[in-house]
Image (cartoon, rainbow, N blue to C red):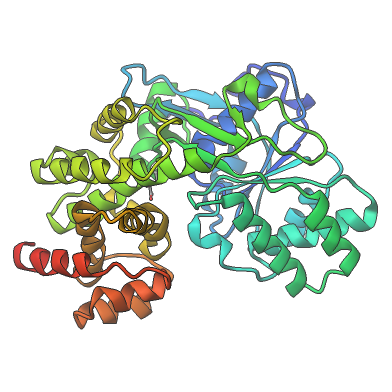
Length: 435
Ligand code: CS2
């Protein structure tokens, strides 16, 4: 049996004692450990020790327990390029579970060394403004920073929502109001705290015991917090920071004036196709993305969906044929099994930016959207037929889907301004006959 990955068994490429936790990250899942954490790890390795991370799991204690036993070290393996050697990430300097130790999280956010807060709390994470929510904890800490005369923070959302910076700002302001924070602090949050938007991209399945076993073997040390990801990595950030700003460009981040065109292109091409594959794939008996994309019927659906979505995005930020070819390869990566049921979660939050937005834009130009409609139909039929779906609105939506309610009724619940459901009803009728 190998020894556990830890400071005693592994020599980091930089002096971990000199690292300060300038970043607090909320949402310590596999995606963060594959995306933002290696960027800060690279910044520290390049000589700036201010960007260590305090990692916060919102509810589950499991990742924190695994990391705590390993001094915060974990391995990240790129799967699919042939080079599967794990890289050990040493940027996590401290970790907490928000549900168990909210005060420790607020103290970290209010600490003088903290400059940046990054968020991967999922699409639905912004709906909650309560005291233990991400927005609630941030609001409380900002109130404390204001009272202490400390510098404002930059709050950087890394979730797949349109205009995620604005969404984060609204959630924090709502939470600050709900918490009864005084007016002066509210104005300071509104005027001085920065909420840049960002687009993040790296396909990263939820961590599994299989990943831990494979990585431990490759490393020669036991790693219970191992993450597998793909070689591709992209982070586009709106260049608007409060106070201290990390040199993210140095580690490959694209800093731009307006993230919206990148965000829309990625949500509609990558995530839209993912959602189509998830529901339609599960209905056809597939379990993983690489299996679904290899199914000729679904491969063709994705192609038609890309034709439709491509007409609704700003093509100056992506070379569509190149991007599509790359996506197809990324989806087909057999070394990175990505469970469709994971992508199928929270459809009520994911569908509007991924599938309904492009349908609405096409409709405004007088264009129909048969492939996008088929993807939405997959979600609605899936609501009544797929086992194990997770969604904050499941109790509301599932009975409607089971009663064969018209698409309009379901879609009104998740996108009140959406009125293009006729094509979707046709696609549902067809799917019910064939699936
Ligand atoms: C996926 C995303 O789970 C999902 O809904 O579509 O997590 C996707 O893998 C990432 O956005 C890729 O960057």
